[in-house]
Amino acid sequence: MQIEVVEMEDRRAEFILRDSSPAMANALRRTMLQDIPKMAIDKVEFHLGPIMQDDKEFESVTSLFDEVVAHRLGLIPVPTEYGMFTFQGQCPDCHGEGCPHCTIMYSLNREGPGTVMSGDLIPLGDPSLKVKDEFIPIVELTSSQAVLIYATAVMGTAREHVKWQAAFGVGYSHLPRVEVDASTASRENVVEAAAQYPGLFDTEGGVLRVADELRACTYGKAVEDDPVLREAVRITWDETSFLFKYETDGSLTARQVLDKAVEILRSEADEFADGIDRLDEPGPHPPSEYVPVPAEEEEPAAGGPSGPSEGMF
Image 1 (cartoon, rainbow, N blue to C red):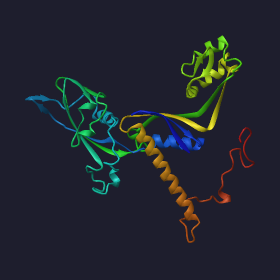
Image 2: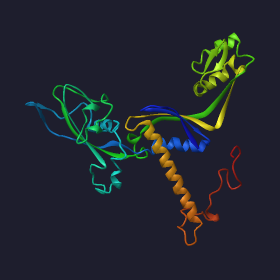
Image 3: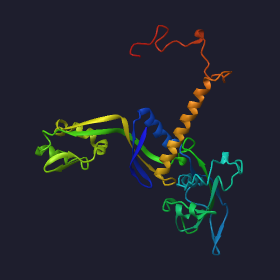
Image 4: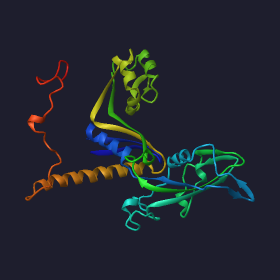
């Protein structure tokens, strides 16, 4: 299995997975979606009672329920540095109590009128942990309202909650191979039809040629159904190579997400291989969790005792 980077930006990327299989491609996709650890706000404390600012008293209420405000805060991307933080339940320093190595504390103190934005979240300590997207609206305040909030971010994965999902729009397709029939490449109607698919084709000396095969991932079906191009262009799909595209929410870079996903897959594969090796070792083995059903207690098949019903297979 090989990974060839096509485009790598801060928050989006494209890469080609070569010499692989649909099973491995899907495993990588699911790992990127649900197994990448990241920081997200998990606990929010609201100040109750009047709030004094510059000798003026504000009400500590908003137009939204506190639960809604807390939910919005939880979805704000929080910077994640693996070298600085670990899972709270696995923290060797505080043993789950909460400390600077497993939590980030934010304060939010804002009075109306105006819109409370994500940029109003101030990290207590390291200023580099300030959220990068500063213009995410949270709640609107009137001239008599204010909020005083303390929020705690911890590390988690999207298996627990979507607020810990780092990668979005993770998709892949088989890698296309596009060939233009040389006998029809200079026909005027073929060149005109190909102009509908910008980036996939271009011309040189009035002759149609392939510019970027990867664009066939977008236009492939349309080209195959085009009444003019289907006789002039042949598209095949490499079943051992896959083009991946994805974006991140900004809490991690696209490179960090890909590197972490590969690291997790490698670790899981090594753990599985070790488990297989231990089966060959002499001595007692842990009992299997599978408990066979006695023959006399087996339920009849879907179509009754004689087997499946008509139309079942």
